[in-house]
Image 1 (tube, helix red, strand yellow):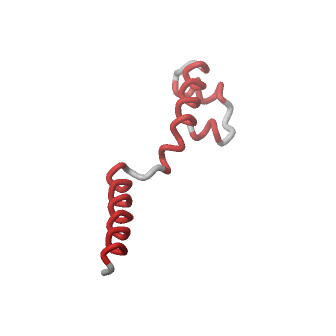
Image 2 (spheres, one colour):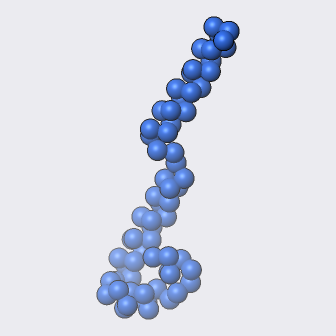
Image 3 (tube, helix red, strand yellow):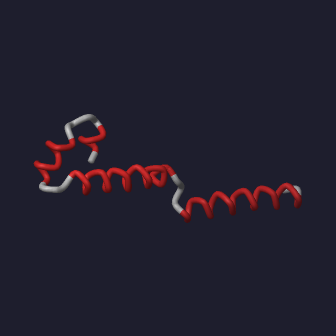
Length: 64
């Protein structure tokens, strides 16, 4: 997939991996659609960040 994004001819990649060009483009589209998820924080990390923010807020209210 990455070779195709880097400019290697699609026909050559498809022959090399014995797939159709339709399969290549479907895979490419799926890869590109999901690429932003690579940069998302895992759910546990999001929860920890939310709890840390809430904890800081509560500490400022209590004054410690």
